[in-house]
Length: 133
Image 1 (tube, rainbow, N blue to C red):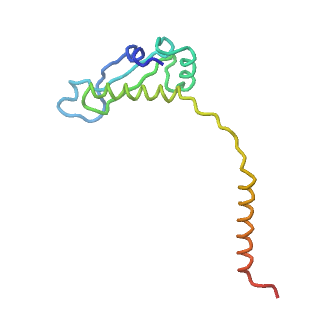
Image 2: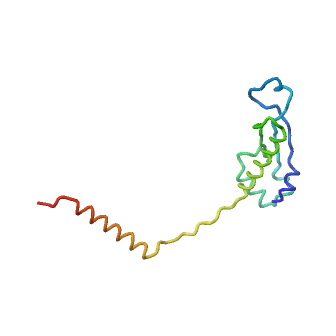
């Protein structure tokens, strides 16, 4: 994954933010909409493209474009930074391959220790009972 190439491929669009506003609300477009074509990207290898299309399937449009929006801040530049950061985090988590689990077995000493503790606990409980008549 080549992040500098990917960032150059991003397309941004400024949109009017929803929600409550003030005097300025109908004049400014501070919300940023990011679009990224996963399959046409030159910064991703073919394997990475396949993995991303599978993992981000619910976030992609039918034509394979990833859309993200950010309208948290009043500043258009700050929203642009936030949406780029969110996008890169999404790519990293999508391409992350978890480690394979190695099945392990407890040692004989650990098994013996557990059973001994169990036996001690059982004796302790048995000694608390009333003796039979």
